[in-house]
Length: 174
Image (cartoon, rainbow, N blue to C red):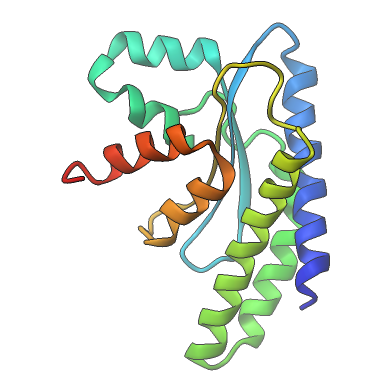
């Protein structure tokens, strides 16, 4: 699999998915953009959160405000635009079938996750996520599988203040 091509495909699909949400909901302000995968790295899905949804969730459960900010499964536009990732998911599933050794499969998963992060990072560099001074959460996560890499990913995709918030939330002992 050509890593650079995969990254470009993911970036293009993410822009299409996120732009679709922006167009469908022109009156909403958005405070979160995410891509997420599964522990087998055979799917990639988008999620977008509106400020209105975040505020509603936090008002109902103020103690979990940080959780709602960083958890795409709670976002109001989770999975919207997933159709833009269908071809990518088919490719990932085929690649997984062809990876017979445990080590080859592990390397492939790491490359897929890194391609997602780099696609989001490139969008960040292009100014795609920032439309003002409001903090935007940009997330890549693996559903159903905790990973030590998540802190590194959050650090690449967000401000140092946001990273510190995420670290305090994800590891209360810090």
